[in-house]
Length: 158
Image (tube, rainbow, N blue to C red):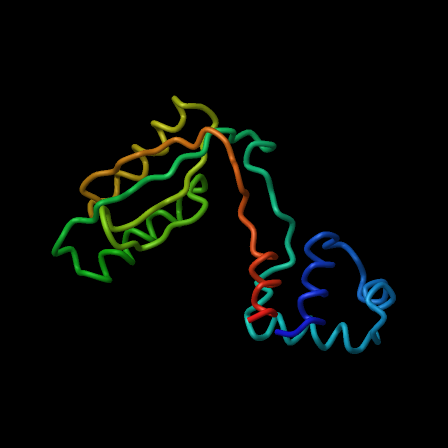
């Protein structure tokens, strides 16, 4: 990544519906350069999507929680993690999941319509036989939302 890539990412992160021609005007570079840079960033995996970012709260899921899952030992190692991941992927309220080190084996970020609905989501998660137990932490407020643009800016400086 270089300064042009960083400026492109900043621009499209703040205005994702902006056209390539307008981006070239604002950045003072050729339209073809903008398109080639965007294509390169997408092909290399730097840009992972162009879809709209959705607010779970705005679509009726104001409760967010993090589940620490303990996966049954001897349930196939990575295969056990894969089975749990497939199970979690089938639950719409599971937004993301990560295999972790330390206490627990996997973290899952989930949303629910209410605290009572969170219990339903947790119960659904726990129907996977490869999960021994779960510990839940409810998020009270978002202090820093998911972000990567500052990281892209820092990547240019290093």
